[in-house]
Image (cartoon, rainbow, N blue to C red):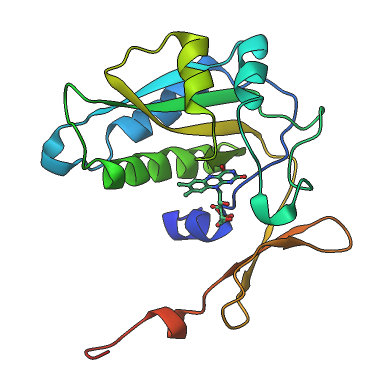
Length: 192
Ligand SMILES: Cc1cc2nc3c(=O)[nH]c(=O)nc-3n(C[C@H](O)[C@H](O)[C@H](O)COP(=O)(O)O)c2cc1C
């Protein structure tokens, strides 16, 4: 599969098979994140990998899922993520200005994961204080995001947005549809 094919296929996944992800595979995903572009090549990002089931569940309790679906997007007990990666920014390396680094590293990670059959949900709606306490994370780290992961157990559908309606929704079969703004509505050629 080409990179472009994976980019088009990849969707945020919120239903996961209850099957472990090997450490070898996790190393591969982290390595993809490691080599991402980084402003001034400072590489302030670090990764707390959580693959012990009790701890994964503890992180899960601090997260919130698919706001537009009003509760219908939260994984049920047999669909929960099996790994969490907590993304940390090391303030000793860079105080701020690492938002683009995060995006690039996580896109590397989740596209590589997709190729392995693994789905991800980047989660910004997390209780950072609880996560900090759970792992006794030192003050020098900013908890930026969590990435929920597991082998995919759903196949969301990409579609063109109608006008400005970008809210994802589930159809009568429970399939998630994800509208993206049309290319003609986001592109300017030579003039605005
Ligand atoms: C920075 C960031 C934070 C996100 N936080 C959450 C979250 O807290 N919970 C959630 O269910 N999805 C979260 N998402 C996933 C988005 O809802 C998802 O990317 C969007 O609906 C588009 O779907 P797609 O990834 O399939 O293209 C987040 C995505 C990004 C990039």
